Length: 124
Image (cartoon, rainbow, N blue to C red; front, top):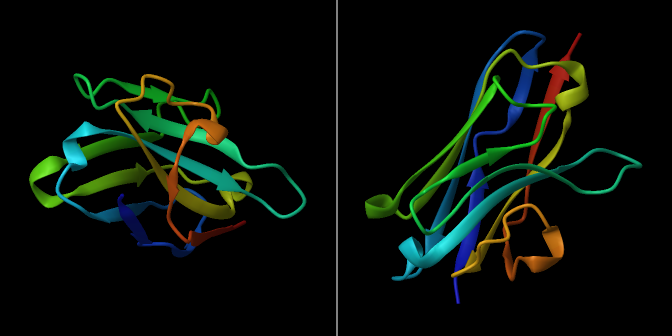
């Protein structure tokens, strides 16, 4: 099992930046594919970015490509989401998720472990 805890959310103006962190408790962090998802009020949870356990390949939703960067530091059991050029439509609760030995990074129901979420609010 792995326990996840997000941090780094907050209130930022349009065009600003935030870096989200997700720290994992467990000794097998490198074997997990990690994803960031978000859910805005009244909307379904959506995929934002993923990074695989095998080769640390990265993937992004079209809506954030070129603005967000996902990365991981296995030695720190942490995955990051650097968010630049933020827009009001990026406002949501952001969740990190983990799934062991998975190559499916974009489907939320494939992930076994979830953090509690962190609120990101972008003001116009």
